[in-house]
Length: 219
Image (tube, rainbow, N blue to C red; front, top):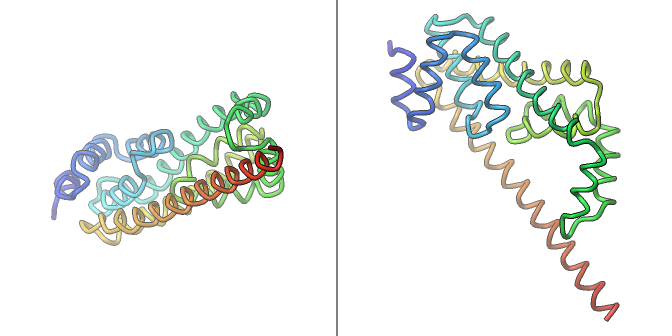
C-alpha cells in the first residue's frame, strides 16, 4: 500500500497535496485541523483536497476517523470565527459607507440583503457551510449582523461536521483513489462560482441599463 505522501504527490495536485500529506503525517489530527482552519481563510487551499486526504490517512491508520472528524470540525470553527470577527470589526455603519461608494449599487439592495439575513441567517450559516465558495464567505455577514456568537459557533460546527464527514468518509472508503472526491467537488465549486459570477454580471447589466434609461428620461 502507498504511503500517505506517496499517494498524494502522485496526483495532479502535486505540491499542495504533498505538503498537506506531510503535515497530516507529522501532526495527525491537529495537522488536518490546522489545514482546514487555513482553508477557511485562504480558499486556494481547498477542503476537497485536505478532507479526502485526511480520510485516506485514517484508512492507512495514521489517524483515527474520530480524530479526523473532531480536529477538522474544530479547525472549521476556528477559521470561521476569525472571519466572523472580521465582519464584526467592519460593522454595519462601515459596510453601508463602503457600499455607497460602489458604482451601480443601491443602499436599498444592501437593506434587502440585511433583511433577508435577519430572517434566514441561521439557515444561511448552517447550509452555507456545505456549499463550496460560500463556506467561508458566510461568516463575514454573520459577523456584520452580529449574530449571537454561541449560535454562530453551534451552526458552524453542525454544518461543518456534515461537510467534513462526507468528504473524509469518501476519502476513507476510496483509499488511494481519494482524488476522485477532489475532481467531483471541484466541478461543483466551478458550477457554484459560475452561477455567482453570472448573477453578478446580470445584476450589473440591469443596473447599468436602468441608469441609462433614467439619464435618457432626465435628458
